[in-house]
Amino acid sequence: MTARKSDVILERMMSLHPKHIDLTLDRMWRCLTRLGNPHEAIPPVIHVAGTNGKGSVQAMLRAGLEGAGARVHAYTSPHLARFHERIRIAGALITEEALTALLDEVFDANGGEPITYFEITTAAAFLAFARAPADWTLLEVGLGGRLDATNVIAAPRLSIITAVDYDHQQFLGETLTEIGGEKAGIIKRGVPVVVAPQHDESLAVIEARIAKMGAPALIAGQHWHAREEAGRLIVEDETGLIDLPRPNLRGPHQIPNAGAAVVALRHLGFDATACEAAVTNAYWPARMQRLTSGPLVELAGEAELWLDGGHNPAAGAALAETLRGLPPRATRMICGMLKTKDVEGYLDPLAGIAQSLHAVAIPGENATLPAEDTAAAARAVGLEATIADSVDAALKAITADTPDCRILIAGSLYLAGAVLRENG
Image (cartoon, rainbow, N blue to C red; front, side):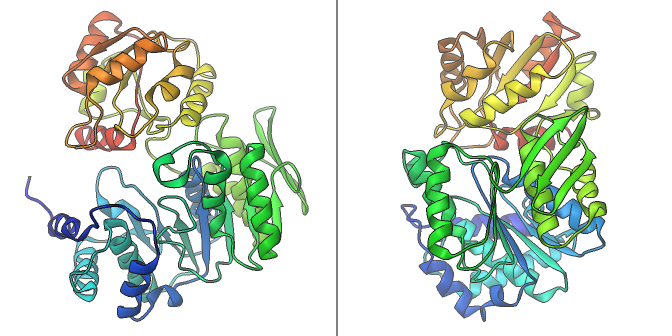
């Protein structure tokens, strides 16, 4: 397949990446200044940070805002099948023509100086958002919060911090206090902040930051509550109780995510119509997504085929809880992970649910964990594991042995992206 021009430009940008990742906003400020500070001209911002759930919360917010008739810019990462997924302009994915023009402009403005891939593409998103009319801008943090490239917005309309847990410890710290402190760095003076349910350690540092910045707080368990009741979502906050359909994004962990989105919308003055759209219209691929068509589905035959991109211990626990809520069926896993992840921590909650695991390397990904290492980690937590050369090979082996099982492909968003591309 012929490479898109944007892919060529993005590859060229990698040559500018610093030899060592040092989290700082200096490069971002320099680049934005040369571009005329487009981040100061974008529509009102809702800034979302957290370890798990921030993508789901952003998807629900977008569905809710658009359900109320608003035009919404959105920036998210990483992408799954192609880079264009990261940038939505007034609801539509950025076009190839617009993306290539913006990337060229930012690349030229940077003047060949060191800058990260994420920083230069975030600057391109800000340019796009500043030049197109919209009512809201949704910004998802890439890594951490305090020194993330998105954290140049001086006064968002609202900040949201989803569940904080262990991930990216090499950059954010080894404790939940340290990680929570980095996430809390998006909290700005006087800007309201919605906080999803947290561990005690992360909540303490988030609350300290809230107090220091004088930010009005909407904290789960204190100012709002969300629960499932009789197949419905019940959210209570300081404006009252709202009874909504259960979120269409699957899993018990989506209840607090939906609660955070609904509380945010209500705080911003949106009514029940927007809140219902948030929980019923949200779409977020590779988050416990049932694949129902495509070449891989055909290869799976009678088996159910599911895809999930969670990759840390908390995501593994949430995935296990989701699987327990599905109708009983033999479950087989296909798993590929990155070298930087806690593989045993991720797989441990799944060991009592999946009957076997086929380990694969993530195709085209330099940082993939070798399949042998993933299989060894699975065996260490009590999962029967074998190695497969590819997802295709694993599907063939599984369906030959158990044709009517449930097959879950999981372990990394990079693997999920490869699967979605292969599945068309």
